[in-house]
Image 1 (cartoon, rainbow, N blue to C red):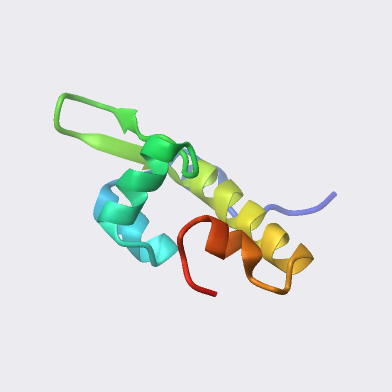
Image 2 (image 1 turned 60 degrees about the vertical axis):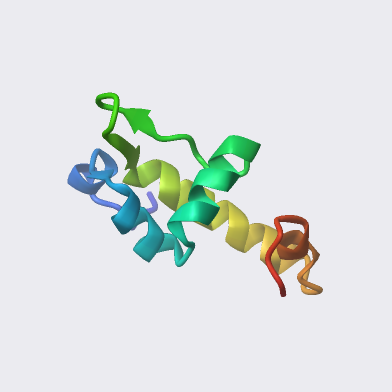
Length: 85
């Protein structure tokens, strides 16, 4: 059985936008834009002003981006998302 790199506690961890930006190396404005475009996981609204992301959803998104990058060494995936290769 393969051991997950995320512990059970980490799977339920909630991250605010600043932590998400650090984890993904994306700017906050890019994260908001990509959420609106459906290119990034949507946050969970805890209140009218507090939005959070589940760590496990972000890890899954990052892994998916990595696998797409591996299958396309030309960088076209990132260009299609508005990021220079």
